[in-house]
Image 1 (tube, rainbow, N blue to C red):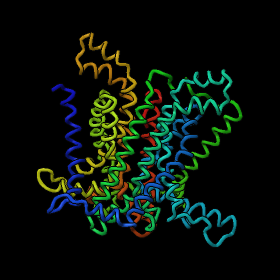
Image 2: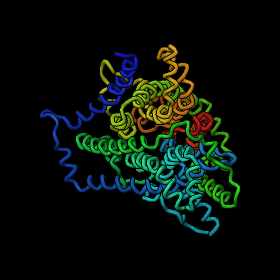
Image 3: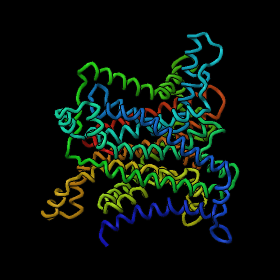
Length: 551
C-alpha cells in the first residue's frame, strides 16, 4: 500500500468513527427493534398530513429563499468580480460575516432592527408620531426569507465571483466587436460560462435553507416548522425517536442529492489558476453609470449588514450611553457565578477549541482534497458530495448520536471538551476542501513531473513545489474553519458542559437571564465575536490565491 493510501486511512477512520458511527447508532436506536429494521415509522410519516406538510414547507421555503438570495447575490458577485474601489477587501470580508454568525446573534440583530422596540419601528414611530409599531414581521415567513437571504447571499458572492473574476474579458470584447450589445453579450457569452457556478451556488444555498434550524426556530415562531425543527421537537420534546430517525433519513437523502448535484456543477465551474487573474479583469469605475452602480451596490450590501450594525448600535447605546461597562464585564470575574467560570475563560474556550478545530480540519481537508482531485471524474463527484454530507446532517441528530454512541468504552468522551472539537471539525473541514480544491484542480501537473524527474521524492515534491502553491488556499480554509468553530451553536448547545461553555452558548444563556446587565454581556460578547470573525475574513482577502476559491 502506497503512502498516499495510508494517509487516506486517517480521514476515513475519523469520519467512520465520529460521523458514520454516531449517525448509524441513533438511526439504529430510532428505526431498529427486536424484529430488526422496520419501515413502520416511514409509513406513519407518509400517511400523516402534518409531516407531509412539513416536508413540502421545507422544500418550497428553501426554493423561495434561494431565489431571493440570487437576487441579492448575483449583482454583488458582479461588483466584486469586475470593479476595483476603495475598501473592496474590507467590504467583501464583512459581507461574508453573516454566513458564519451564530443563529442567536443574527436573531438578536433582526430583533434590534425590526422588533417592536427596534431601530426601524422606533424611527417610524418618532417621525410619524405613531402609537404602535408599524412594521410587524417577527414570527412571519417574511423574516424567515430575509434571514435566509442574509445568511446565504455570501455563498453566491463567493462562488460566482470566484469564477466571474477569472473569465477572460476578451471573450466579451470579441462579442461586442461582432455587434452584440451588453444584454446579448451577457446572455450568449457570459451567462453560459457562469451557469455551472450559479447552479452550484444555488444548490448549496438551497441545501442550507433546506436544513435551516435556528432561523426557523427562533425567528419564525411555533407556527412554522421545517424538517430540522420537526426532528428537534420529536427528539428533545416528544421523545419519539423512531419518527425522528425516519425524518432524519428523509432529510439525509434529500441533502445528499442536493450536494451531489452541487459537486457536479462545481466540477464544471473549475477555473485553472493560470488563466486570467482578477487584477487583469477588474477595472475602476470611471463612467457615471459605473459609479452609480458601485455606489448603489455598496449601499445594498451595507443594508444587508444592517441587522449586525443594529446589534452594535444597540450595544453602544445600552442604558443611554456607550457600553463600556458591559465590555469591561467581559474581562472580569464578577458575573462568573452563573457559568462557574469567568467570561474571559468562556472566550478562551472558544479560541482554543477553534485553534484545535483548525488543525484537525486542515489535516482531514487536505488529505481528502488530494484524493478527490486525483480521482476519476465520475468517482470524484460522488466522493465530493459524500465528504460534504456533514454540513447537511441535523445537528440535533448528530448530537444525540454522540450521546448514545460515544458514552461507553472505549469511546467514552461525552463529558470531555474533545467531543466539541470533533463536532466543530466535522462542520469546518468541508470549507477547507472547498478552498483547496480549485487550486489543486488548476495546478499545472508539469511542475510535479519535472521535480520527480529531477529525483525529488513525493514528500520533497509536496514540501518544495506544491505546498508553496497551496499555502494561500490553506490559509483561507484555516480562517474559515476558525470562524465556523467560533460561531458554532447547534451542536455546542447539545453537547457542552458548563466548564467548557463557548461564546455562542454563553450569548444564548445570557439572553435567557433577566436584567440589562445580562443583555449587555450578550451584546458585548456578540460584538466581540463579530470582530474576531471579521478580522479573519479580512485576512482571507489578503491570502486568496489570485482571487480563486470556492468560497
